[in-house]
Length: 364
Image (cartoon, rainbow, N blue to C red):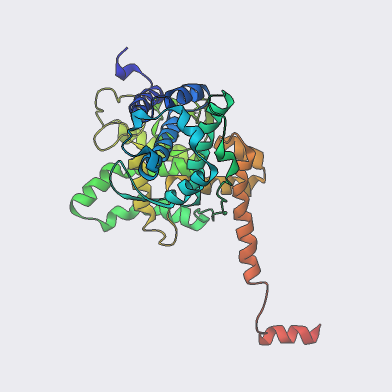
């Protein structure tokens, strides 16, 4: 089977699997057992993230532990894990806040979310060897996990959503020269992508993975491959349908690069558009609409989830449509309701009585 006949999502899995193998070569030899064990219950992308995070831990030990001076990554054995104490894990957490990357010699930093992710990876790593009685101790359980503080959910307000779509549709009148040529070439595509993200709440990875055959105009839906590989029909309204139809008409004039014939959305190189390109495109347009919010494709997904909850009041429906396995993940969309109440509270308390309010008080 040649590469062109392999479905997009299978190609991504293959690429990630090959990438993981390369990263594993930079870890202690015994680490392969752990990654082989978690393969059935994790995606290749997750395993790559864990591999990078665990590599940082071993780089920390090699650079900070005097007893390992002169040792290479390939020299390390599973017995090393038993020599680590809780205080070493605490030092590692402190190290993670600011450290020199061994890979690219750059200063790296981690906030509380980065710390928690790296500690979760290390806990999972230790748990595997402890459960199989290959080590006697698990110091990661003796150290408190970093506490996460709630972050404000950033989303577009209804007027900002309309303004963003209007801007994409009409900003060409302000452009000249090559910028105008580029805009005209990408306008229908960009409008279709942003309308689709706002109108369905699909992930950017799901969007770029769409094939033209995944659109079902008869039933008003698209077939998406969710995280974990499950397939689902996501339904869209008239505005999304109109934007897709206009783009598909423009798409007929594009001759794709071989192997990309089935892709729904093309880059200017006539290949399937990538996640980074969509993220850059959304940021480019959103900057013209709001300077106080950093809008990404994921923020468009939050915007959709909030709007759907506001209209239906059904958190379980929102969770289902967004493809969340756990409804608690979806509860963050309640934040929009809280925000509305806070805004109303701002005008509920008067600091000074106006003449009209005084008259009303006397009459009552």
